[in-house]
Image 1: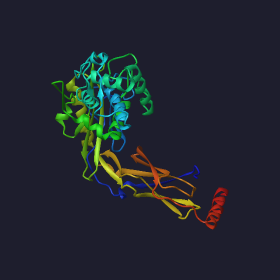
Image 2: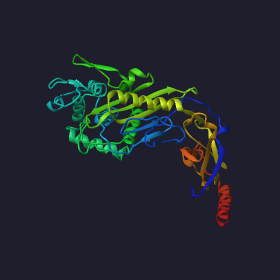
Image 3: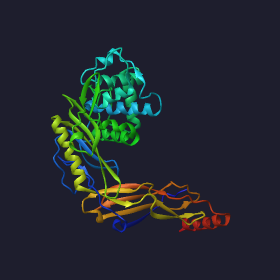
Image 4: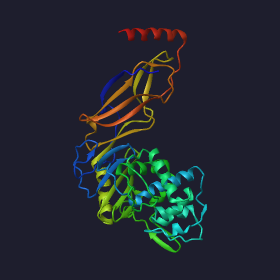
Length: 399
């Protein structure tokens, strides 16, 4: 039981054990928004983009990130999500044989070169879709899961709603242009992050540099795989109307021993070279201009809160994983934390119950909010203790 009153405790983050690691960045060109608005961002030639830190769940920079734009083959991220989900739930298997329809064989655009009447496995089709960006492989997977592309598009849109992709609508599995086929940089970042977090076993496919099928070797179109060794995915896209697009992710190890992952989404650039350069510019800017600060260890008490009618008088609050935050390099000591605690906590309280919020600010601007959880369970007190605390609560309510 919790009343709605909140108490506040402010303290300087510098008193907490911290350590500096690799930095994070932002985007630019026409008033980008990011963590603190204190670091100039580079000019990025794209219709829309976003840079996020998946490790800290911070958006570091964005521009036109909610504008509806054509995704081209970035659409295949959602197709892959649904295939990964079907694999995880055992609806299909990697070695399952898939018949190739004439409709899939005739798919326009980039191709894996599958053939009607020649069976191919789910594993091969996934490689064809992810590494080679084959529209024929993508359509074959869509038909496997839903019978035809129209039904599969409905599944795509249902999953988009479940993931909270409010600016997205799909008409097909491949990303070929359509009047109602669109998404946003924000939504693509959410989708890509979901793949990385939920399906690490299958995410590794995005790091493969080439794939050979039917005697035809094709390279991965993501040039960053060759340029930056920290980049391990994800997906390119291009049509005449969408321009050149790229979702890319890079992972580097911090001096504190933890890994930090950035994700950039760049939409509507002018060329293959431009999407590569602009994406690399964002990732490097993020790692170089921002530092990652470790504020608290997993299950370290951030604060305590008074408990009534419990076997103990206080409950420690904290986070279940190490709490990291990105700030402009050299500004970590200016971070301030405000703990908002729910008052009048009444036992029993289960471990993991949300009891408050930790808000981090830098020069008056909120850069991160994190729920604080009960780090241990508090049992109910005996009848005498409960009666005493009932009287205390009555007096508090009368004040």
